[in-house]
Image 1 (cartoon, rainbow, N blue to C red):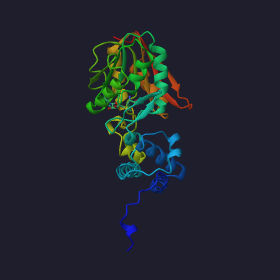
Image 2 (image 1 turned 90 degrees about the vertical axis):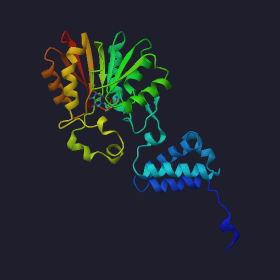
Image 3 (image 1 turned 135 degrees about the vertical axis):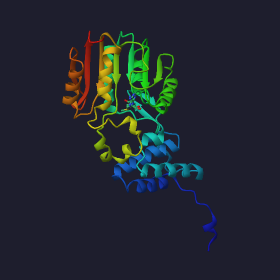
Image 4 (image 1 turned 180 degrees about the vertical axis):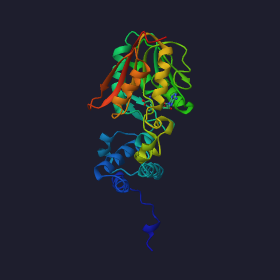
Length: 294
Ligand SMILES: C[S@@+](CC[C@H](N)C(=O)[O-])C[C@H]1O[C@@H](n2cnc3c(N)ncnc32)[C@H](O)[C@@H]1O
């Protein structure tokens, strides 16, 4: 046996990256594996992906390499990258996310756009089912004088939302309340924005493992037809709405027709409009309550 065997041979960043890409390649396409390996590596080296190239010949400390390997193993087990990096971008803002809350989705930005246009001078703005705080905080950031109330049934999600409010320096204007739908809100709302769970229960098992095994079930599952939580919210809207109030509710792309019908049945005096997202898919129903509030 030569002496070399006993000498620790540090690996270069390049070698580590190749191994990580190979490990991730077992569960995804090569180019995706390489991208994810690079993003995790940039995180491990506290740099950006663009700057990695200049560091490929460096050696990595064993501690750092071990932490990187642990994160690659998590990703190989299908844990979403956002949870491993504890970060997600939404409406050009940086959010902390972990398994206590849903990862905000790009398609929800349509709901924010619509609510923003309606909320410019609204005294009471409410986000129901706030999760990471994504919608409420995006609205507050873009409406510098607005006060926003945000509810969630999950105390865990609200703990994350509170962290995000502090990081974005919006704590004084966004208040979080725990409870079922609008129950914790005594104020009458002028604008309401809500992205409630809408996956039909029988579809839950078909969701990709990334979602099904890692994101909170309470953030995803919407009962038999996916509209169970929204149905209960619609029934609460009238008695919580100010005169002339408007509500924006996110739906899945297959729910346009049924969600519009449901809203019209529940609130016959309201005007209901269906909006598409940037991909042309049904995404939001808008309910102008007029004098439908009690
Ligand atoms: C689809 S996630 C949306 C999270 C966040 N608003 C977003 O768009 O990223 C649905 C959220 O609604 C919350 N939720 C589910 N049922 C609820 C209820 N009955 N009352 C209040 N919040 C509820 C979940 O905890 C979860 O945070």
